[in-house]
Length: 419
Ligand code: CAA
View 1 (cartoon, protein in one colour):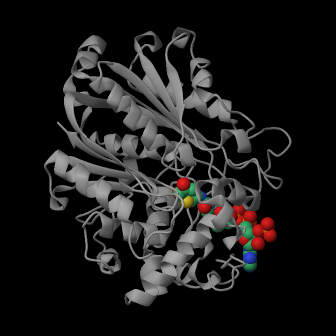
View 2 (cartoon, protein in one colour):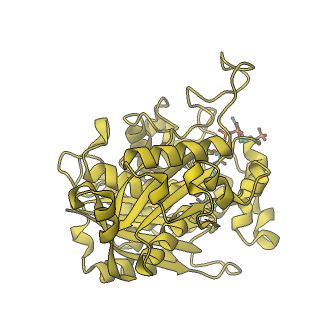
């Protein structure tokens, strides 16, 4: 989508992403167990909205419309109807139009896309929220809930952990087609954890990951699938986290900037956005992310940029192999060659194409409905020098985000520019 009305992200807020292995996550061996509970879905919505309005100095009364991305609140928290939950965060939001948007793990990206379309139609100040709570059930039960993003009737039986199995299928095909070793793929995980270790909001901030551990299945890093054909292709270190968290941002038109009394230099511009959708009922070619490739191509064409102009990218690394496939879908490398770029350090914070600087879905965490919103806020933070220990040495001018739902089925990509 090329934009008829200019649109700006004024900033936003990301809550800490937490879950198992995070120091603040309450579980039976935590010293606070029994005296303190983990935040609820309602808490995350409240914290994300409060944080975004405060960070952008936006009075709730000035918000004209809002969207919330969430995948399965009904299952993990027995709560749906989350548009009205956003209204519950502030009295001045009462009776404003707010809507929940669902597109599996791309729910946050779709909420952002919806707000952007509304800006095109005349809205000047929009609020975009993303949230998910997933730790109310075991990872195994959660695997069943997340499997609703696949073709459930056909793919659910692949494994209790349907999505890890779907992407193990991709790893198998990728390794059979190209000369890519376990160590090549493990480097994506090592980078994700190293970045997360520098990020105080990250789920895996306190967990170290070295190449030997990430490359080898064993007690420290189990190959946990029960599907015997796929088990060798997926280890815990390859997976995004089962996280709780929220993120929110304020999106405005030029008139919105004026109304809020804010200079353009506080914001980043949304130069283009693309939204593509694949066929849920069919498997796609396992060594490629075709729906993602179309989204990436379209968004760069609409933005009038080439891949070489991207200074920083936030991509949907739901599994380590997905980050490699995303790099290839975006045209950063030829098919089968992304791992070599990772091995050369080019995607690290110090590299020429930094990807997922805060740790991505593997290190920062993946509260699925929040992820697409978090990606945009992360680009804003990098462009405004707010990333602390993981701040890029050179402030980026052009950023790219790709948020994916299901197995390459719903994709939202955006190009963002700093002024
Ligand atoms: N040896 C063998 N198996 C072991 C093991 C060991 N040493 N340790 C654990 N396991 C197995 C066990 O079977 C265990 O299950 P049970 O306890 O029920 O028997 C299972 O692994 C999980 O163990 P835990 O619950 O202790 O592990 P965890 O909580 O750390 O979870 C994980 C690890 C299963 C990998 C989990 O992080 C996970 O499921 N990650 C992926 C989340 C996911 O799929 N998100 C969606 C991504 S897809 C996307 O983004 C698109 C979309 O639209 C959905």
